[in-house]
Image: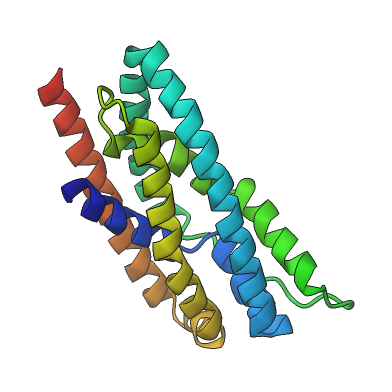
Length: 209
């Protein structure tokens, strides 16, 4: 239950951190309507399913074949969290809302774009490759199933947040454009939470070693 709740917190933070997925959903909702925003969000969730499958299978093989490499991967996860904290403070969330194209896309195109953006999003890729292993035990024979479960948990948590983002698209875009203070406050909050997660992971690894 501890791992379940901790991962839920991490999933919420990742889902609400501004980035390519959120920018796409906001821009499609603002420019073409909520249906396109929801279609791009559904595409992003499909991309997460691919990330989950690859991570569960790949990390499971790594645990069996090279436990030391798995430990290194977990430490890299903590380093990655510190990098996210740095990025949040120095570069902000990277939210860029595109303007409408002359020819509006179809819902299928919005969905496909959501899949592509998610699969190529380095934040999501690194999250699943380096951060997901923090919540499983290298000696657990059911590690593959648990990784799939955590991936499913991430999707379940992300769906209502994505829907809320689409329905609040106009307000969110205006808030980010109107006040730099709002963006800075959010980014510093994200940075603090990322740093706390990283410290917890590094401390646990030090005790384990």
